[in-house]
Amino acid sequence: MISLGIECTAHTFGVGIVDSDGKILANERDMYRPALGKGIIPTEAGEHHRKVSKQLFERALEKAGIKIEDVDVIAYSAGPGLPPALLAGFEFAESISKKYKKKLMPVNHPVAHLEIGKLTTNTKDPVYVYLSGGNTQIIAFAEGRYRIFGETEDITIGNCFDVFAREVGLPMPGGPEIEKIAKHGKYIELPYVVKGMDLSFSGILTKSRRLYEGGARKEDLAFSMQEVCFSMLAEVTERAVAHMDKKEVLLVGGVVANKRLQEIMGRMSEDRGAKMYVVPEEYSGDQGAMIAWVGILAYKSGWKDGVISKEKIDGKWRIDEVEITWKE
Ligand code: ATP
Ligand code: FE2
Image (cartoon, rainbow, N blue to C red; front, side, top):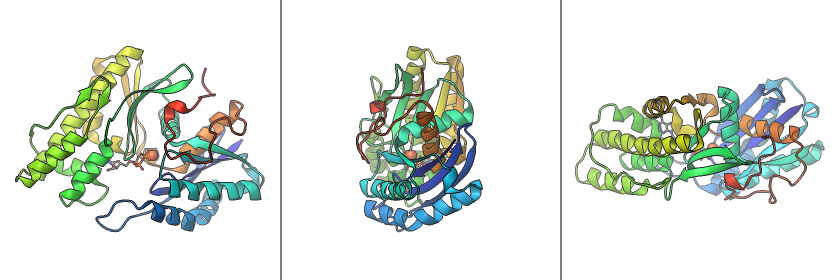
């Protein structure tokens, strides 16, 4: 069986093709790039997706060496995300599903990040640390659902890095730039905020901004921002590992490319008798293969129309609302 997945929640439009053994046959993508120094404009992202969809769809089929007739299900990213971008993806998915008479399946984007992480690292039942531009969550599977153990109370970690980078004149995306300049920094105290299992990053951003305006070096602030944010995340992850008695920690999302984060999380996991895994870079950001793979999992476990989601798109669809039908 073959699934074709469409990713469309934010910057990226992607088309991935995966078979029922988890073999990734194609993973084509193209990114909307906002004007220099600007953030994402949702309607522009939607326009971008509409412009590239047909071409990427054809390229993915060609890469996979299959015809649309060979595909069993069209899975698309139904949320959470930016409504104009989601709508562009949905409309494209719906058009091909109608034209070629294929089943159309809405997929939750964060679930897809976790599942592709699990597939590509061969992990079984980890604590997931999901860090991206849109999400900062510590998650574990329990009783039929992905449960959120801890999450940000305000901005995401990716957002914290990106906004600070932009304000100190670094190119976008900011995360990798912060990592680069942090190598030449030393520690300045920033607010460490963990409340129970939840985290807060907005105080770190505000304080860093104020210190920068007061003459502090951006290298020192970048270094300190990394140390404080990653230590906070390690604290909450450690508690989830202990509480759930898990033996694996899996890092997913764009931010986990960060080597210092991997180092801190790796050490914490080892101390706890767990093993840390990192999703390969090719599958850490947004792409269609992860959506296609959830299409396979759900389909194989008896998915029928309308079971996963009530809506065509849902900009605020939370991971813990999804009933996971493919696990015991
Ligand atoms: P989602 O929709 O799942 O929230 P996203 O659209 O934010 O995903 P991702 O590619 O998962 O996309 O994550 C992008 C974020 O990762 C950006 O904020 C970027 O700055 C950050 N990032 C990328 N590389 C690094 C790095 N080496 N260190 C820190 N942050 C990084
Ligand atoms: Fe994502």
